[in-house]
Length: 124
Image (spheres, rainbow, N blue to C red):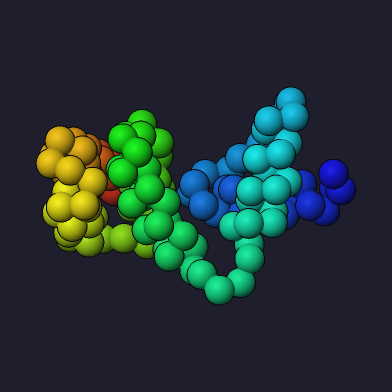
């Protein structure tokens, strides 16, 4: 691991999630930052928004709502996806991932949109 690679990974991870990510201990964290964020998320060919859309579809399809929450929140915080687009994504994915997963996504999307609106109104 080079310091440059770690810094690139931490910077991209911070950009993806919309908050400052600090370096952490352990091999798992290191591989995540150095490989996934420094090498994979920074590759040319797809925008960050493209990657986020692909990831959301995968997470919903696998039923990983807790991780989808993180991605939806980051997309709202970064302004990559509007509330209307996120609601449309929920409708679209319902028909491919299944009704229960889509219904859960729709509810969690509305909840996160509401939380995001409250934070914006409060000036945070």
